[in-house]
Length: 440
Image 1 (cartoon, rainbow, N blue to C red):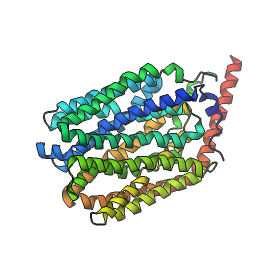
Image 2: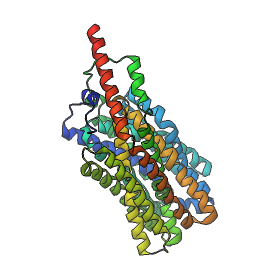
Image 3: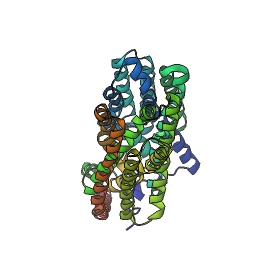
């Protein structure tokens, strides 16, 4: 069964956008996502400096990171709903401006409490960017590229983390930790100014070619966010897997500082390489999912299961070894698969929900990624580290991937049936709408 034959998808989601302009939209939206994560992850590069200057515990440091993911998780759904109705481009620009100004506030913070408040507003600004941004990207490309584009777009988070940690470490070494925050803020503000000059809602919004739907039809579209077991499993499995990736992103510079005696710049540079491996893995795993199993959606879920089990095995082995080149090599290899489920999970969500609520659907996925993974991961890892050390906590973190694999395994048995039910409901809704229009 092909996952690209939903009649309403074809009817409503066809947008006449020149291919060059579509890639320009992708590049600018991708660039803002990079800014998003640069502002979020630069903090990790300066953890050692803040720890020494303000005498902070790992628990407090982890909380500064987790508060951003927590706000993203709590606000992504309502803000994405507003963006779907108010205008996605305007919403993206406001978000980028807010997180950039808040990042500048981090540079001006005089104590832990002020830093916490600034990080809180970084999270508010970033809350719905990922979900709304990917909805904009998917709206201007063919739907058969969903896993590839989803994996590539979400990999921007990793590339932004690479720049945030790597460049942040360099800036902190030469200009202090405040200079690192200033650099990230200026980059975001520049892109926020350019974006609305080139990307316009009216150029990317699909023309209405189908009759106006009834309120009951709108409710049915919203129900697709949660009314199948497969889409719930996609949310949960993706969120659990991001627990592993999120913990590694936040604590890797500190791990290298403590166990390899690397300075802030060197630890940030190598941590950036680790995160780069994760980002490249997201893209490659998404492409592999689209290319290897064309027309076989259930096998794509099997591949997601393999990514979970593979990352768990490799990372557990890596952190069971003593510090050295072999361990670092295994960490990089394991991180290729740590977030590999992002492409398949996003494709599952896109194909199990109605196109008119895709921004909200990806907001729900972002909610799960943050509340199940990115928010509790650094916080829990920091708590465990305070008791048994960062090395031992890193041995436990990869085991979460086995739970994620079990969730995807369950989804594999219901995915085809749930997708068929969605297609049937959409065709019935379209037929009813046509009949109503004729009566009018």
